[in-house]
Image 1 (cartoon, rainbow, N blue to C red):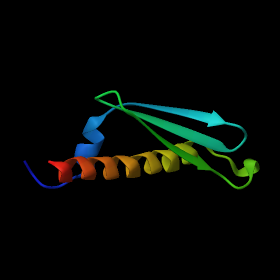
Image 2 (image 1 turned 60 degrees about the vertical axis):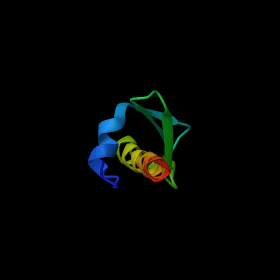
Image 3 (image 1 turned 120 degrees about the horizontal axis):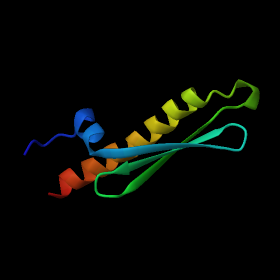
Image 4 (image 1 turned 90 degrees about the vertical axis):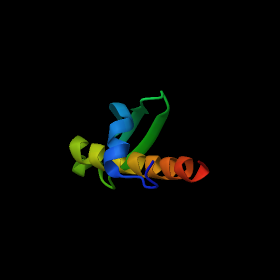
Length: 79
């Protein structure tokens, strides 16, 4: 077993991705992992006139991925 977390490993444990627009300028990403655990990331723009769903998805996903890094690091260190 390697003592490292990689983006490839993180991407490999994501089973499903869902994105939801909430209100006028917020996107929520729900990443479901292969074990059924769900991770949530959010993004929002300052002005709803500038809202772009694809950009919102990108940043919400990045925030969710950051949480997976932390959880996978914790799991690895606990072994």
